[in-house]
Length: 166
Image (cartoon, rainbow, N blue to C red; front, side, top):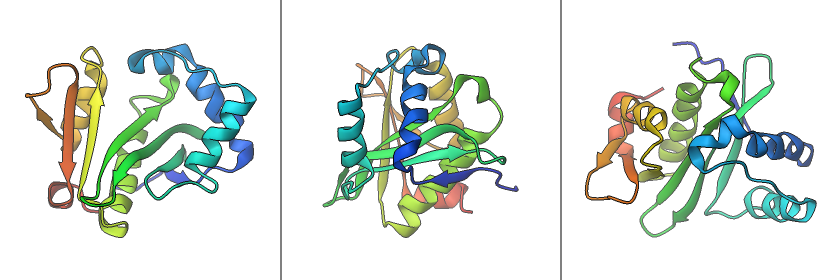
């Protein structure tokens, strides 16, 4: 499989795209709706997630083969004791179904597990986010049926490497 997708650490000027992505109603519908940031909130978020950032957070823009941003992938709340983190993947509505999310997950999770030394990635999706649930399950995430308030899935380094090694 040829990977067309590139992951990019955002620069300050990329905040315009990030703010647009989060404000797009169709893209954000499955994750609770649009998020609008003031300039001050955007600056704080950028400092927290990117520059200078924190070792417990990692955010990347997803670029298509032309180098245009088409989404985001990140982890949050990395527990440095057990190396487990919360996963986030968002593809702009108009670019879904083209394989970009799959490629971004391959690249990002390979980095997380095999370069950073991560052990487990967890995601908690809305119960009505059926498309997101199916994408993660097809990729290899495993559903935890004990969680009732959301659709909780996870994947370990061993699971990832056994089915998705680059």
